[in-house]
Length: 310
Length: 310
Image (cartoon, rainbow over the protein chains, first blue to last red):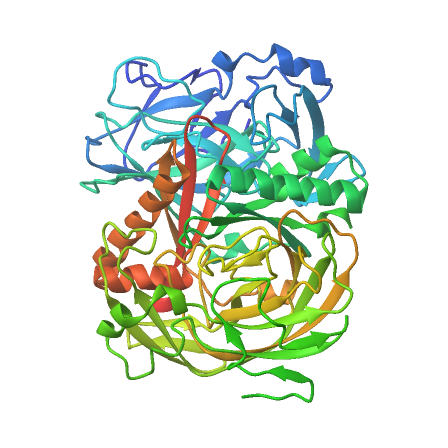
């Protein structure tokens, strides 16, 4: 694991779920740079040699282990913690899976299914079928809730957590609300690439280390996380976009229709099977709300870059 | 109005609402290029000299007049019409408004409010406050429903209509389901720029002419519209993105929270008033679904390019 001369929080210092009674593993000053070593979302159960059945052995209670928590000195409720992602040191492999009863189209895709990816600095290979640009980011980053007890890591909340925002790449910064003294920052669920929506429920799940700068912002009173993305982080080599749509009175159904439509198109035009299409959609397709005002019907569009097949 | 040597459907050949009994104004062959002259969404009520009160005089019954319908020879139910946007000839002015009881934050913004924009080929000026890149596209494009009677033009449907998909720019193509003989294609609601979501309910609404190529695709059996975007159409000069989020069990509420958060940020950081912030959000901010699988909570993010203030 990488040590850049700054403090490293090793991955055995991890926890399952959010709980403000978990003892901090480190006390950081505002402005400090820290490396978090992150276990993958399967808690290390999935390896490069795993087969699909391993999916059924991954317990939800140990999913998304988060490294930390780090106590930020001076942080009080009402403040914000600004976390700037300086560098990712990816592991070179990852996985995408379909879990039973999980994912946007859980009614159509029963799982278990699993694909292993190999990647370098530039691209990830989905067997010989597709090449996806590598864009490492942090899937789970959050602070502790004021509410006592253990809270599942799966749902994100107003203090962050399992946000799965694909633009938390190197150079970006996120501002997280603070609800307890010291904020209690933890990081997990690193991804080598993902599309907006993470539609099959998993990205390119990949263990890696993340180096961040933490800064305390007094009295921000944020209601929800906010993030900044530098211009160079939005440059992509993805091309040849086609979008399918869903139109109707429910945003969720419209999103499901849009993704279903893309899976139909990928199976028809590219000859991939439906499970591969679904997982590729999760890794490089983007869900956008095209219009949210022309009541009673919304338009959700799913953008997919066909250049990944070249 | 522009006549490029191809057939032009002039704007007096327009209709209000979708109705498959409306007589076609032209019969087109597959492969033909046609120019549609389009009246703005206010049905010509708003002019460059209008004040906000005009908003209250715009009747919903005459909103979004659509030019057409055009009968596509050979089109039968189950086919698709492919429409490629060849060229826009914009008028150089447009408007953005807030209508009472309309828009994503209708509970917070009562209207009426109105801003007039001037624009050239490159950028639109929002008074001296902001500059937004001009990116003309078609807000409303659809075919007639099989169901008899008049159907409001406001909601989009599975055959298209008021889709407000911002990427239907020159070079893009849309594929629309056909439900009646001849398809009965109409076009309206041209915009000089818009963000994903059209959050305040209006874009830069602007009369213009649209030149398209229509092609018949037999037996496509599309459930919803689909569209292709050429790589050069996705190049943008917008920069300095910051995103606000909404996190929770309802996608609509999450979208409202994300946009509210951005309006708060714009008023605080840029000193613009809330109505201006809301309208700018509609014109150049984008609603994305960051994750739709980490139940019970979704993350919707609203991306805004702060470069528009430079």
